[in-house]
Image (tube, rainbow, N blue to C red; front, side):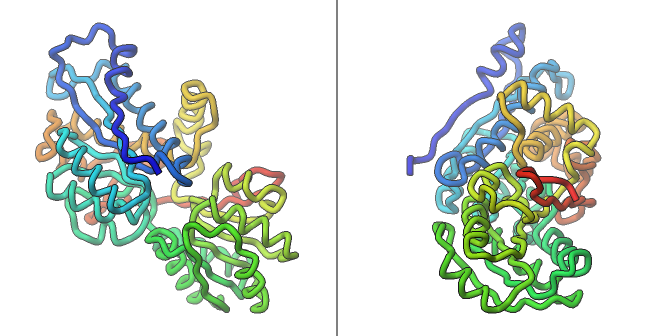
Length: 372
């Protein structure tokens, strides 16, 4: 796997978006990090696109902070979905004087990296969903989508009470994200009358699940829940159908992707995934965002781009409200934010979680993810 990369996109963005900006204008650097290489690079690239779109829009509006003309610049790092690399690139971003951070993607990377941002006093807005991220008590840590405990609980209750799936096998990939989501799902399903008939795990690198599926089939489950990423959920769904297993596969937001549909093929039909946040088409500005993304990047928006877009916009709005890009000065405005985002009406509770975190549930029908 290639080593960490560092890309400055803000300069080129500014050259084309604001040709009349004086060279003396204040530069406000926003950091971004996600896996941009390796099997999860599609998540990272989509997330980066959301950040780039936000930076372009901000600079295109001739932004001012505290009466001074500013130019936003995005500093991008590849954390390779690695906790060790994540802390290295976090320190590199801090050393380059970022004023806010949009990232990381993986909970297992976000949690150790968050200490770097805490120590530097840099606010960090992340899509990571493991509850431990905000339970650390860091004043700099903010989450822009529902946490695993809320998402897992909603999907667990829905599976049992609404879908009548009572006997459930739970599998996770042993990552902070996958295991946390699976734990929350299992606890909620059990509370409302479901039964976890078997609990198994795999690793991030596994793609052949035939032996595992053959073993869990003996438990005669009504459904299988998988806590993990689409690069595994897709093959698992396909292999379930190849083995004649007609029950649905359930998962979290990392499963609700085009990549899952591609990897599962016809075996994707009927499976379900939850998503922290309202469906984009049901949010004010959601359809317009999807169209802007399509025009700018030539493809449909993925799941995470709107959340990272909102993250950058919320940081900028807090700076403008406070009249300063100094993290110590604008952090209180960020804490008290009330921002109508593309993904949600964004306001944070005392821990840094979304005060109101909507969720949606999708099912694959006709080869597409359809809102239920």
